[in-house]
Image 1 (cartoon, rainbow, N blue to C red):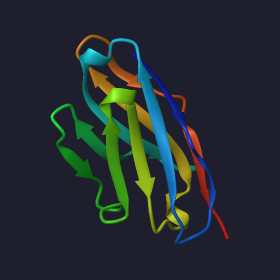
Image 2 (image 1 turned 90 degrees about the vertical axis):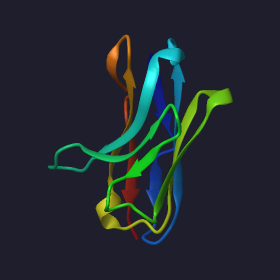
Image 3 (image 1 turned 180 degrees about the vertical axis):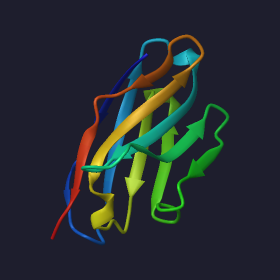
Image 4 (image 1 turned 180 degrees about the horizontal axis):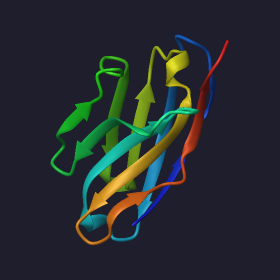
Length: 115
């Protein structure tokens, strides 16, 4: 499984930005897809996840602001980020938990919240 994230960029506080991640390869083996993020000087943290059955979970710090979704026809995972704040500045990584290849990671996309 290969993952390619895109869509990062500069956004103002209180604004919105959407990022996406295209999966390719052994898609059938994917059990869970996650968005993680890593801010400068901090550990990588889980932001949101969606299982193959559509069960969704969010970290408390993004609940009510971020929305994870997927388009199975396009093999694409999305993260819509609304009402962003400075603490949301980070490199965002998509991650897939697979039955064959274990954990797979995309290359990351940088989101910068700045006025």
